[in-house]
Length: 523
View: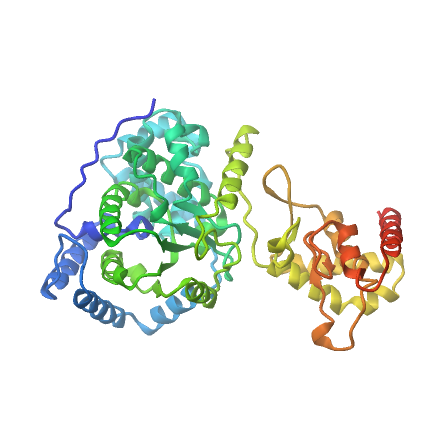
């Protein structure tokens, strides 16, 4: 049975009513310095004539917020401004762990022992010491706080306090969270799509998280939302990339009146405060997508009350659907797989697929090592559909294959294999992988399969008319990672689509059979 929570919904006097920092990741909030900064922040807010008991509600108050934010950002150093600008535009710097990790882990243990109130931590350690002191688990917190061992120690202790309150002090306290830890109502919240992960990453290779308050299931209890969101966040933070590069949050509001939005956000802010200090999240950027100008005061208030680290990394976009899509693209965020559109309801296909993939992994008993692969920019994807066919990695692989076309066509069998191996190496050296959808998850294929797919680029375009114009000589990749005239079918279907304009149906069939025989000889 799930534990019962008693969570008061009220506006505090320390400015927390505006703390939508379910997205905040800095751990300085737990020490005295942060409290002093919060007092000064509130004083500045009040001196500007704004209330701490509510969000701004008028355009004039929103203008005041904008001025305060502008003044605040001016305090950043040139280096901080430059790094922030690079991060928010998807030009993130290369992140490496420090060389003295073992020493930092030892210091982390000493800092944890200095914290007097750590009952939940000790309980978890008693249940499963291997997990609690595990290198993988602790690195997740150190990376979040940029290896500030004191901040990470406090966050770890707080993490177990939060986890015990949300999930109880049973086995879930001392291991990775599983979908089986959620009840039916929790799963309803999870499936709603209010929090979901996009199936591709941004231009910097970071995970993109979508938050849509309009999808919240308001009829369900607070506990259900907390369990579902904590499970979701801890699931996506298991990958090393998410811990090092951080995540990008896209917040999409639609279909709600101003009164509904204000009530929902005030309620959500108070409840999410319980999770915030114990979640090791690093947020690289936040994008608010708003179709209505009347939401500007609300968003201005949210921006002011989040931590200073995130204020400079926040962008607010107003406009119609197409304008909002364009704005995201300018920041390196892929938009062809966004689950929302101009008029229709939220498309939950990818989100439900992620849930199913996660469930399958857990059913196989792989929860301790589960790593749900999310395609990166230079990955080559196999499969059907417009999204796979036009994935950046597939387009790039097709271009690289074209660069070697003349040599490949003039080579013998063994030389062809060597060229395909060379192209695979080029893709892998640029952090590209060859991914296939299998058993409800993306899996990385072996070297021979990757090499064969490169060969498919050539075989499936061999009969396609070649133009002397470089701009017309580029072939679009097919859905399985090969290059064709735009078909979304299998290898044979792609070849037929590429040749149908100049060949009869009988000739297409014969050509497909010949291609199949060549494939058998090659493999």
